[in-house]
Image (cartoon, rainbow over all chains, first blue to last red; front, side, top):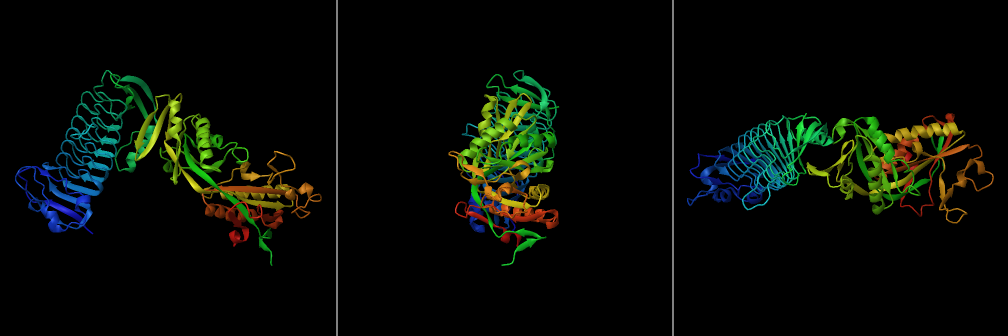
Length: 267
Length: 302
């Protein structure tokens, strides 16, 4: 069966709430029923049929084509299946998702993967602020799963991260890993100001020496970490183009809070 | 009934009687294969028989860098006991005293299993609050700070209740040298088989036992029916020209694994043929009333 495909007809004149377009909702619905689902975010009613041309059948594999940054909540609360976005994604991509896979060929906007608890999101280009951060009404950020970002990330990447791994191929913005509870950020080209601010037990792994390090991180020197070997091998198995070996400088912090977190700066 | 012979070596029509056991596998890695082996040998030391060692353990095989979670050389170790409570204690003590202490080591789960056994979940307390938990790909690992760096240990490993212990072969021959050479070949052949270990020294037991003894409190004693020096004095099972009997005991994760290993073992023993001095291959049993697993030599060779 071919993937159920939604092709955006025109630039929408309002933001779209695409949270109903997940396998759990679409399974068993007829083409007509799918077209009748409402996705408006203003008082002007808009249905799936108005905005998208639909092709294919397999509701376990969804394909969005030609989407832009106004297509919000793609794969929100996803509980299984695969979503491929050929284009950009709006805010809250894969927020609160539990299982499954989302791949975006373009960029994603703010709160991507916010408070997700499992599954995998990969975005080939850039993401907005608060990726893997805290969704509205939640107390914690990402709680599990894997996010891979090919380009740059905005501010507050992995804010209040609880568990899970986020890899950024480009540069992360300010306050990356702010108030992290635990979990792991892998930053290929560093971050902006105040990385790891308020970090309790999380790991920030820098492949390049970061320009600014908070004074509340204490240097533990350089040594070899088998943990890095484990992570390095796993990331490559996930198709992430990375190789970072095992030698790293460890800084523990943020000493302004619990101080059991760390920065591992590859040496 | 015609006698079954393989290259002139008589296969006695009998069966090995084996028992259900519980088992687990762990993977030990280290900076070099040599150090992974040192760690694994230490962990599996004094683990020949549950009679007095608490567990039976051995090295299943070595692992290449590609096969281990951290990309370093490794060793797969199998550990067997009679029940699930004992295996937990044995695993914790052996990994805690022999792997945690071994320079550069790391320890990972080697079995999915029906149930989970605590591995890092109990050893993490050695970290005294400085231990770090990391979840990678749905598996939890503990990083325990130690003087040599960090000991990485997976949170749990799997337990199987389908394991079988006590599969065995008895090899009879006209000289000790011939029987030892044949048994060494068999152990080598079995070491290449998956899911099995031969827990005794070098895989071979020279002092097979019978249940009970004439002394109070001695639960096992020498198998006099197979002692060549007692042939004339007891109800011996040995022909007069037998000079030595050695046994190979096999523990496996499944009955099939044992029977495949026995097949490989019998053929390796018989490879030298009767000319070398090995005359019989038989197996140990207790009349079939104690262990539910019966490995009939005739079926295995067939």
